[in-house]
Length: 280
Image (tube, rainbow, N blue to C red; front, side):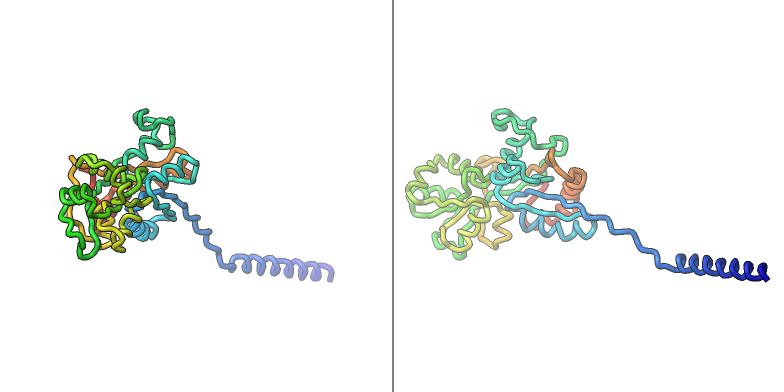
């Protein structure tokens, strides 16, 4: 009798263990948590706003990365980086601002001995063009840079340009120097207004608050402005956009991967659609 009772107890225990095992095996397996998206912080010249936002849509679909952009004048961005702002990748509208952060650059440019640029990552990414634009209808009938120079000299036009710490402003200064025009005298005479970045100059022209402005051809395209002339290399040199990963980048590998992508055909087609070109 005792043996039968013991056998019944053993059978009952065996059934409990079997049911427990089945229940455990029948539980749905949970999938692994998706890998967290890596954030890449990109500081880029204001003139790249439209193109980089377009590229962002495609890139984020195909990569486990979130791109966060900070668009402003290259001078402002350089200062922010110098003050230890989080930045993985810097794309400047001029060599000067990049050189000022690059320890390998000429000491006459990098006067403070700043060492923020991972020099082995630095590339000349794009070339742009400096153009003369006018409001709709071109009320002052400005024909080109030669005509502008004459009208500035006699005080018959109001021109918008970038500040001296903005690359487009620095290119404009070279154009004024080419025509032997005194910027300070023109500003004092009230024939020049300024913008803190190229977008502000573009806006002044688009709104018709000035008679003309000097901007990049890419911004003229994006704003639908009328271009009446393009500056030559003799007038202001080449307009090169250097790009580099920062030494203190929190996501250096992801930033390098994005910079490599920007040099491929898919990204270049977007850049070329608004007037950028690869560096000759």
